[in-house]
Length: 390
Ligand SMILES: Cc1cc2nc3c(=O)[nH]c(=O)nc-3n(C[C@H](O)[C@H](O)[C@H](O)COP(=O)(O)O)c2cc1C
Image (tube, rainbow, N blue to C red):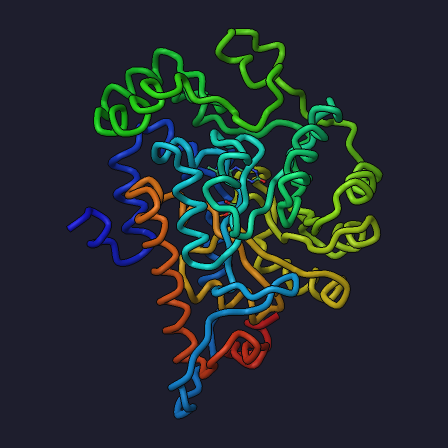
């Protein structure tokens, strides 16, 4: 029996991850920003929504799958970009991508991933793969990565637009944790206190390939940490505007997804500049502590652009019922970040698969109570009152 067999929900997986990971890494994943208000609000907003029960519907044939960008996905959720799966488990991004592929759902590789997109493509030639971009002021560097994803034929480019300035994450500084990985003394002591993780994860990197790096960065940035030349790190794109989205649109032949849209105006701007989809996201409460909960802003975005582009939601999904609530409020698809990271930390591919399975089982259970058999039957009628629905 593996440790995560006894994990019955995402919160159980989180507890195992907390024990296994060094504190600095766990808090990097688990925490939000500043006073952690937005992080908590994402959950509270889901909890406030109540659903209408409807029984004695023939539930004998059920299907959790749906269509996304003209193709079937076995579940209505996929894997959000997280620049740290590779610290949850040795080559964690490949493990997580394999779990997604086995479940028949899309996987997003983050700009800062520790595994290259070429390795992911090689391991999983036929799965649905999206690449997430944090645009840099060195546009040439950004386009080098986008070109590689394009040449590999990846389905979608996810451009995250909330990163022009840094984030307030005091916990990382307190823990001596930085990402990309460059541990100081506090972090080194923290790692030594977690010998299991040190052997299973960091030890294997050090033995096989050395200190992990941002594998998708152009070489001039990728080895900057190892060389100790911090000044060669890519700089945030403080001057970025919607015109740069238009430029990426003109360059990128696949689906263009704009991530971190939180209201109707921003969603309309994304569509006007060529987005095929928007992700209603507050970065899982990790970016701006005064952000609204995404599930509360979803109806406004759906009303603004729901008939012109695919509306996706993330931030705060911990239960299958949350996925159903998001679909009920008009999202076509949902992304999960921490839920599958906790799973990856517990058991690599098998742990990530467990997280996916938990969410799917809980979704199916919710289907039974709200009386729907498939995603297309989910609508505003599932909410206990109009107030809760919208
Ligand atoms: C540890 C961690 C790293 C993340 N890294 C990125 C990233 O590199 N790029 C990005 O667009 N979003 C990143 N995110 C945000 C996720 O894509 C997603 O928006 C968020 O996790 C959703 O909230 P949830 O964790 O409550 O599901 C990260 C989230 C976590 C937890």
